[in-house]
Amino acid sequence: MHFHHRHPASEAQVTSSTEDNGGQGPDYTTSMRTDRCGDLRSDDVGRQVTLCGWVARRREHGEHLAFVDLRDRSGIIQVVVDGAADLRSEYVLQVTGQVRERPADTANDALSTGAIEVDASEVTILSASEPPPFPLDERTDVDEVLRLRHRYVDLRRPRLQKNLEVRATVNSAVRTAMEEQGFIEVETPMLVASTPEGARDFVVPSRKEPGSFYALPQSPQIFKQLCMIGGVDRYYQIARCLRDEDLRADRQFEFMQLDAEASFVSQDDVLTFITHTVASAAEAVTGERPADFPRMSWHEARERYGSDKPDIRFGMELVELTPVFADTDFRAFQAPCVKGIRVPGGADLSRNRLDDLTETCKGWGAKGLVWMKVEADGLNSPVAKFLTGDEQAALRTTLEAEEGDLLLLVADEHHTTCRILGLLRLELGRPPVTEGGLHFLWVVDFPLFEGLDEAGNPMPAHHPFTMPHEDDLETLEAGDLLSVRSQAYDLVLNGWELGSGSVRIHRREIQQKIFSILGIGADEAQERFGFLLDAFRYGAPPHAGFAFGMDRLIAILAGEENIREVIAYPKTQSGADPLTSAPTPIDDRHLEELGLRVLPRSE
Ligand code: ASP
Image (cartoon, rainbow, N blue to C red; front, side, top):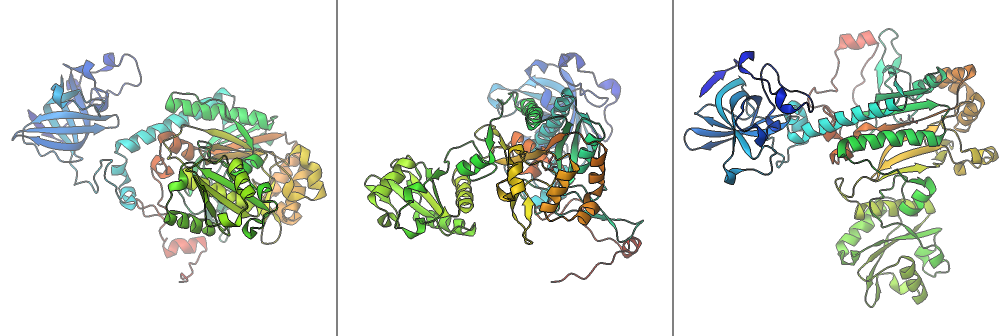
């Protein structure tokens, strides 16, 4: 047994294993190793191999023998080391030895290399390591900030290695699928003027023009439209987008989108392109191509699921009950809209849990929540006594209630009733990310506007470049704005909004009309989007596009609830980067150069 320090075996000692990989996949042999740890199998028994990797675990066996789990990107293999070397966690080793069968009773089915081990004849310490800042096994729950501060150690964990591979697979499948359909990748700038995606911009001060700022792109929206005017015809980009919004499990300040735009196309064409691409990405990861994605109108999604991004992995749909209580004496149900959901088997929910749910609904803006347990001798509910026998019977039939079910009802304005029950449905029924398979859904016919802003102007539901629905142009003329549908569509996966797109306005006069409806006056429109309006003068083709969040798609395909797990260097929930300490103050000289002065923080 030989131990070395920092002098890896020379090229001559390392024999190639290319003949063993049967031409399948890349050859990982280098001048320092013959194989990767996790690639070895029983077929390799008898071979002399040289491996490189990190010490994942070390167990003593008797006085002189140690079992070392050696880890690299491909996985882990057990190495038997004879001799009392100082091999600690996360040391980087080069090991030469013979592959042999493990004694049958020590085989480890949980490892792909679990039937074999390497009997080391030579071990070289390529690099020592201080004790790692946290244990790298998957069982220990490690503080997120600590993980991110030492992300380079965190990344060694098999889960994150796998997630990065899923990510690379999706990126590559998306590129291939877009190119198969004739899209070409065009890069757009990072230092831009503000783009109207409805979030706050990140800004970058200009040194050449103190007092002026670039915005970082919230999306390449305007540039891709300009590409269409520029004759690019089919554009795509895996684009970094930046939005200064509060972070959540499915949101980071910066994220990647598959951004696409095509000319001389309709909504159907775009849906076909994107379906092909997303299905190809899913297939590349899971090995199974998802069936064609169903479509649902925004209106139906709201009525049935109380959401514009319905999670259709499970039922518990919203049921219309307004007619059941049309003549009710019960005041709480004398509302514009009464709907309910049936929670199968939910009658055993405790009173405390029901009280909590009621409070949660109030927190969401509901006046209250009515619960009813379906029991053998009737409805058990604090409000049962206010309902007539006919109402109770009609309620049970409409909700198809069975003994043991829990019925939850909300009575309010239509949109509030739908929204609250939609949230409640998710709260009670949503399966974990790894369950229920992949359920894609196109939600189409979004409204053009959603509500009014503080100044009383309608707000665009998508963005101001979205074309109204052809059938609703008269409604738009008539000024019935909130009932105008648009040619905008979203792609939803398991209740996550993957992305959105629309057919664009390509005529200057319609664009100007929409700006004026939105309360963007001619001067402001010229100032903010003059370059786009100008471009429309020079022959804009009809065009449409889409963008979907790569991080969200990858997270779901990797079985992760939080997109941070599929991003190599994410930010924390508060937007900080514990690894580089960003954001950091800059020195006075630099501020001066930029013409900036920082105000004291107000408490
Ligand atoms: N730019 C839009 C977004 O980022 C997508 C699109 O309309 O193509 O959501």
